[in-house]
Length: 209
Image (cartoon, rainbow, N blue to C red; front, side, top):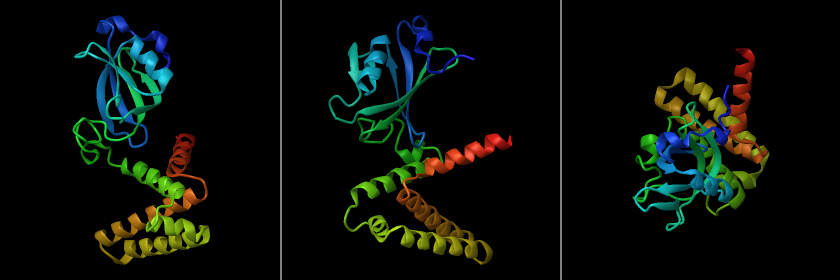
């Protein structure tokens, strides 16, 4: 099996020195943009940690965000099976598109995978935990301590169970949303995240398959 991270096998000749490069949000899976890289752009991306392309219109290297400051911070790089396309996972600092949308294909609600918002929620809760903005409900939860947060998780769990038995779909969805939010806060208060939960679920799935 070929190594998806082995850039030495890239087929630069197939695209006359340029390879299409898909950029994906590393947390939510949202497709952010498509650009082209030559070998120099790839080397600069890896060296600087900021995604850099070869601009076919400007005929030069172009680092995303070099004018706006909305850079794409490199998280990972993968190569497709034919070694002629790159997949970049990145952390966007600001909107990716020059029109102000999160993606060059539209707003995140248009192109984000259905469950991708859970990653955004996880990141927002982590931000609230570190910054503790005044007036934020999440800040009040963290300031109340893990016992208070655990109490809220218990309350929402009971309300979700009751809604599942005796209430309608709308009520069940509302209670489930409250439960997931407070569970995310509880995990963060313990230094954990939803990503850790997903990793454990995936591990259990592999072990059971």
